[in-house]
Length: 334
Image 1 (cartoon, rainbow, N blue to C red):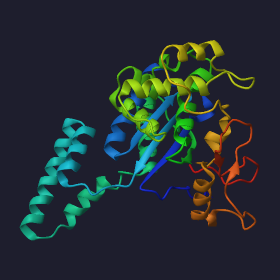
Image 2 (cartoon, rainbow, N blue to C red; image 1 turned 180 degrees about the vertical axis):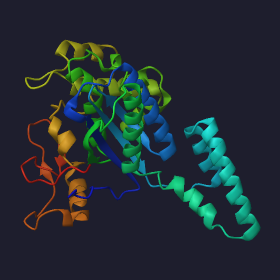
Image 3 (tube, rainbow, N blue to C red; image 1 turned 90 degrees about the vertical axis):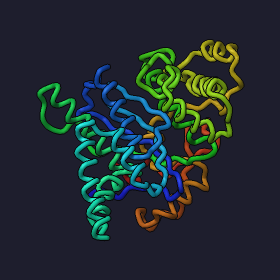
């Protein structure tokens, strides 16, 4: 039996989501990543979510996403989203249906059909699970058609970690995601891996720049993109330094980035302890994690007295996880 997801209860909530290809096969090539990114961006705009950064690897993906509360959409705004999301032919059909139910509502005063029309689309907005479900389904159908393939493409349900939207939790998670290609030994600099949020931002992708700006705003960083980009690059290289456990930047690379005009690092050097970021369930300050625990108290055993677990391994600078990574911990939402 699947355990319910642990979800945030703030006005805006942040999640790191990750999913793998079945059998962890390396099937996501360059064209697949391009299609995945385009689909992700279209669904992002349709659903009203904000992707802060992401990374698409050969057999899995990571997305750091902001899920705001869903505002009331007037019909004009709803139609604009539908126009941007669907093909011209499909939108024409949708608009014709809308015109019919609107005319009926105006003539009879009965808005039942009109409200059903609205709900058909608005119910898919502002919902993390539906966003991931549609993203993975659309990619699977496209991939299977191209490769004359049938069956499940993705391994089990996606994992998610609720991330605190203040302090340095967001920047820590964003750096972890953008550094994936470096940690995997694919590139020496994340800007060279075009299928991640940082590289898209460097290449003038407005949505990617907006996402990284939102991340840096959690650290109180404001200003032009040039200023924000310099600070984030320093943060990436400082947090991505090579350790005995992890591939990364050598000290000279870090020093070169510093010498090129960036400011001092925004956070202390940390090690990318992968399991905390994928299986931690919730990540942030002690107060944030305790609040998540109290709001989901029924999901834990009676012996569990508190929620926050200090992250081991050093260099975490006050970050806590809801999961201590021992057997029997709450399953990551999926």
